[in-house]
Image 1 (cartoon, helix red, strand yellow):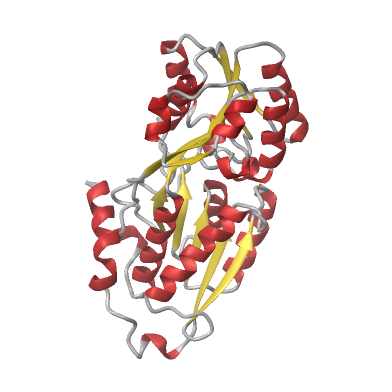
Image 2: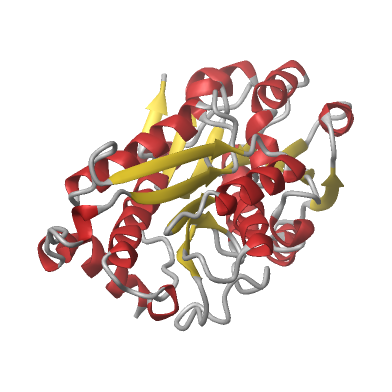
Length: 330
């Protein structure tokens, strides 16, 4: 039901909701934006531009009837909390957030200002909403990754690297969904069915990242699943460099992007989620309540491959994977 509602939301929103009335446009509407990534992250800046463009299409023009206050968390929980406090202190009518830690930081600061998350993995488990169909308070938005993704990542990686014997799932407990536990059950179940040894690898800094990748590359058959969170995005250049150096195949959502040298990604089309977040923001600015807007789940997923990286790692990608890919770098 939620998927159908989301499809209808994207398809009919522009015509269903009228432009702001003159009464609504008499004062500048203030909207905060807290992004969990680094401001130099190309994907993050692209998604911010998608959000801004959709708001303009819905009748909200910066400097005319809306002011956007943007802050970047850079994958650091303490920084997110500082900016969450700052944004709430500015008195916004609405705040748009990305990543679960950024949304949680805002939730600590206010239970009255409406919050729309463009990406969050486990909003119920994190205590952000009461349920997906009935959020129940001041927060709603769009899930980017469901818990089953841990197993799906491992299944894809095994198809690309069939000789895998052991695979680590790497995450930062401070920023990963559920402290890292969110994806573990599906990851471990897939490892058992695929006869792969699962390794749980919590890390807090680049030293931990290097130790994990070095360990996996010390013997043949090592692989890596990189859990999605802002910390990993900040350190992805280092992760990709280490993976290539130690010849370790890895998969993530868009965190280790193939455009940056990552081997394989599988995850939702984030642009769709930010378009949805803009639509929800528009509805709330026009009078809707977050408690009445159900949390939406992703409906479009993408597979992307980097065949250059595969060649460096000594992998031959099966035609079945290439045929399923939405993007291939040759």
